[in-house]
Length: 113
Image 1 (cartoon, rainbow, N blue to C red):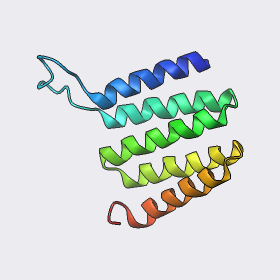
Image 2 (image 1 turned 60 degrees about the vertical axis):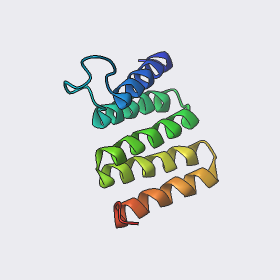
Image 3 (image 1 turned 45 degrees about the horizontal axis):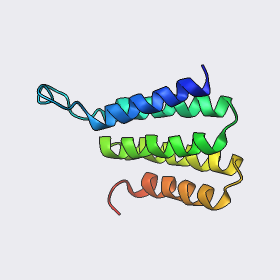
């Protein structure tokens, strides 16, 4: 896989997060946040292989947001912690601290804060 394939996965994830539009959207065409999160995760893994830590981190944040919308605080926390690690590798220390802390808070308190 390549960075271009990661970009394609991001576009597909955005479509999944939007859901179907049009005449048949009422037939189960709502957003599929869990599928979008998987696509974002796979794209982030491709960015990691390419050593593009900035894009990997930003994509992991998107995966976390999707899991938050899906209702899985533990998966959301996991992606935020992974994003924090990728931001650290990108030497974006402030972002690394922010997202690592966000992951810990989500893990400790879920959505109740």
